[in-house]
Length: 224
Image (tube, rainbow, N blue to C red; front, side, top):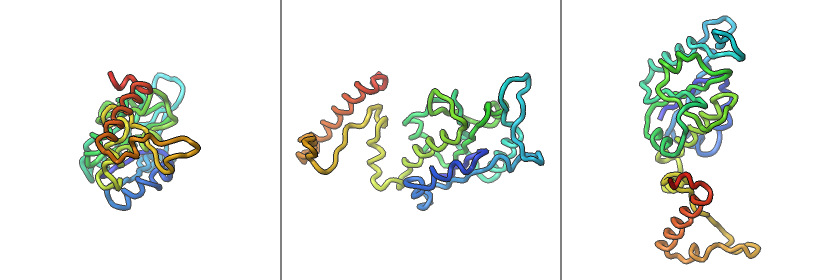
């Protein structure tokens, strides 16, 4: 999988992608992540990429030209399954969307900043707009990192036990059941007997019941 990220702040991705599962996926060559500085495509001698909005108003707007030039350059190298703009008013990101995107080969992510991007970017250059929640961030970088983390961990070979990802919360519209590890008794806080029984069918039945119970208590909207 190839992931290309267009941003004004490339350094923001150094930490999220430099550790743990994402780092291992890159090292295994399961995914290639490239960060592209939109400022490198500015036609201004000062490398400016934003300007005042037509009609007035507070804030600055990212210009269409440097974004378009960057995208054109990348599209000459590969065809993209999706060109994604991270936006507060986009589709709400969820696990089924992560599953679907994890099957793609080439994805491009555009991280907005300031008051957003020139509307012509949204009208002509992106194929999909995604939001990670009903709130506003300083820019799209953190949202892109969240989505990419959720996608990459689903790529076969990324996680040692591939069944682990399939049993995550929201994979079947349910929250995951409680999990325990050693010791079986700590300060009198005991692990449920069924998990120590060795009876796998009963364990799976218990886990499913717990998932239903937890979902009803914490996220009843999922049961609808």
